[in-house]
Length: 84
Image (cartoon, rainbow, N blue to C red; front, side, top):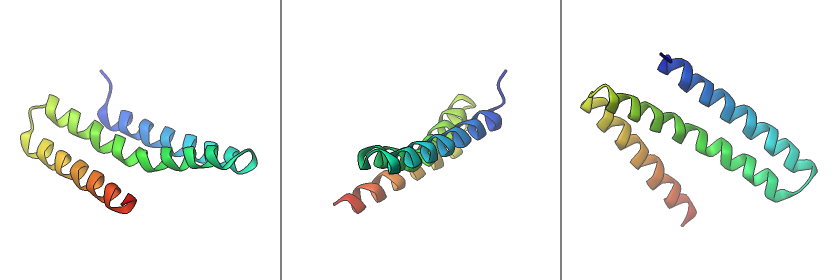
């Protein structure tokens, strides 16, 4: 069985390292690639909260599932408010 903390740690580490690698590559190649790296860095915390929410749902822990859903909602609303 996979330890959830290890899986989340792996996702965060992979997201940050790949985002930095893509952004650095984009600085030498094109601006669009650099922005793709920034997008990967922005989406990394979203993935962490989504994974935690799925884990809490699988454990039938409704309080923490609701908290994770609330955090996702705040992150999405905050992202849209910055775009508009």
